[in-house]
Amino acid sequence: MTSLHTPVCEQFGIEQPIFGFAHDIPTVAAICNAGGMGVYGATRRFPHEIRDELAEIRRLVGDRPFGVDLVLPPGMPEHNSREAIEAHIPDEHRRFVQSIKDKYDVPDPSGPGMRTRFIRSSEIEEAQLEAVFESDVDLFACGIGAPRAAVDQAHELGKLTAALIGSPRHVRRALDAGVDLIVAQGYDAGAHTGPIGTFTLVPQIVDLAGDVPVLAAGGVATGRHLAASLALGAQGVWTGTIWLTSTEHAAHMQPALVDKLLAATSADTVVTRSESGKTFRQIRSAWSDEWDAADAPAPLSMPYQDVLVGDLLGAIDEHGIEPLLHSGAGQGIGYATELRSTADIMSALVREAEHALGR
Image (cartoon, rainbow, N blue to C red; front, side, top):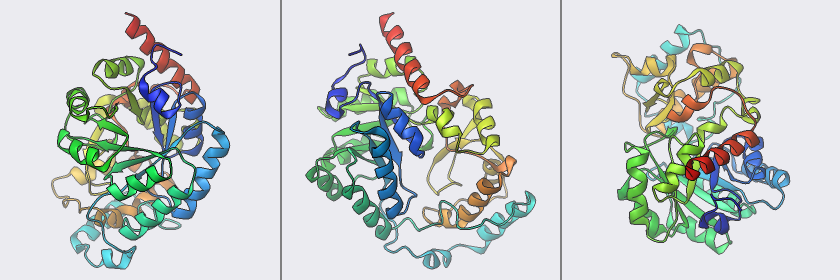
């Protein structure tokens, strides 16, 4: 047992109070096998893929616990109908997206992109939840939204639950939903993020959460960040960006994108709605610059923006269009200067945190 051992380690059956989120199966498994809690981001996966992929993670981690994360935003359409969404997309937005495609000579994709494989809808959410609840995953986390019915069902099946929130005003909703863990995600964080900085947010969430443990998220990239999070009252950390440049994760990315991530400083991320319609922190690229231009239309809301840009984003990734390549990433990306194995990253986090606390 290390000096970092906190009650969440006992609660979740892990060696270190480090939760690691990734969309990559080998990375999630490696986080678990290094003593943390790997959490698989399954929001953009079909239900049958979720079943297969959670089974694969279980095969890789054995009896070690792991989690899955879904985004369940309120206000989504009822049905998985691309045609119904397409009918409401303005021509101005279609022309703008086509202009980006033409300007950067982006070939057509071989199929729908990640955001257009299906429509973020109640129909899909219900099927995804069914797949998660059929699995033996240990933790069910909600990246956006934490419906009480879903939390109750997870508990009935013996699964622990978590909600990611970015504002003190969301604490009551998470507590009312009955979650076992709250992730306080600050402005520094990659992907969907809120307006309040991590160091300001975490103590406020801790004070409001009562007996429910809190993890700090957003800009957590070193052991000093982990030590600071514990000092703020968190029982551990939720990490994401630091795993993008692990050797396991980088093996499944475009080499040009890996180079961008390694070269990026903390000043090289931007918050944009051009990705999904919701605020989304990512690496600055020609993509974010084009949408930030004075003559660019305002991004649409989710899921309309998903459908508007999804196929083009898929083509950019598929064909490796370097100026437009980007990834969700937090401000902690400035600490990623070399490729390291997941085990080495985990070891460094623990070693640096223990040293900081020892001082």
